[in-house]
Every structure is written in structure tokens, then in C-alpha cells.
Image 1 (tube, one colour):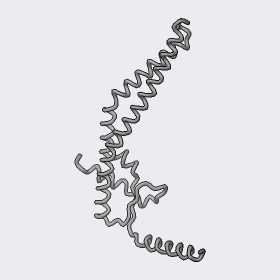
Image 2: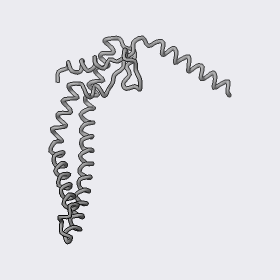
Image 3: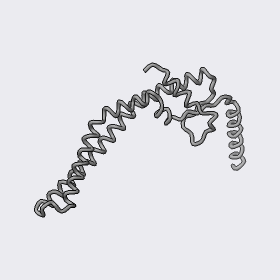
Image 4: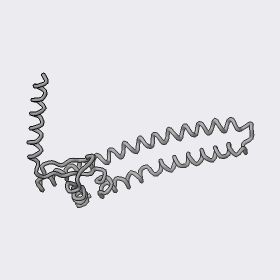
Length: 165
């Protein structure tokens, strides 16, 4: 049994070496940089900021109102008869704020993912075209460590930016 495992491991290891030796040109893409630095990504971010600005303003207004109420309660200026009602109001406002913030975050992330999916598809097309044109055998996206000589992220961003919007 042990001999069988060793033989299998040796066969897999030798296949890995043969495969690795066949790779002549290797490239690496830092996806997060593409998502931050490409013109398309910046355009997407502007659209999202504009789309969600009214909701963020409402959320900020809720937060400001809640903080004012909290300060009034803590300052002792609220009459004792109203104090309990104000505390209850503050807790309700806090709960509403948390729900609205969670909904905003969820909606924002959904829209962001939708928008960035199209950017990812476009980037993948550019990467594949570049790989074929420049003779890459393997292109890796997102790795823990990569020697900078393999990093072609700048070329991908440049190619993406050169496309008509």
C-alpha cells in the first residue's frame, strides 16, 4: 500500500515538473488595482456615489438627529416626565438607523457587484486578447506573492483605458 502511494506521488510530481517546464511566458494581474485604477472602475465609482448620495444624506441626517437627542437626554435638560419617552424614542431611532444602514450597505454592495461584473468581463476579454497577442502561456489573477517581473497589471489597465467607453 505504501509503495503504491509513493509511486502515485512520484508520478504526480513528475507530471507537475513537466507541466511547469512547458510554461514559457507567465503573467500576473492584480485585480484590485484594475478595480481601483482603470477609467471604467473610476467611472463606476462616480455613478455609484451619485446614485447612493441621497440615501447616505438621509442616513447622516438620522444619525445627527439621534446624536442630538442623546445629548439632550444626557445633559439633563429633558424634564423627568419626558425622559423615559425620549429614551424610548432614541432607542427606536437607533434601531431604525441600524436597519437603514444595513439596507444601504446591502443595496450598495449589490449594485457595486453588478457594475463591477461588467468591468470584470471586459478586463477578462482584454487579458485573453493580450495573452494571445503577446504569447502568454499562463496568466494568474491575485496571488499571495508574485515576482514583479511577471506583473502585467499596468499593461491591462492601459489596454482597458484605451478602449472607447
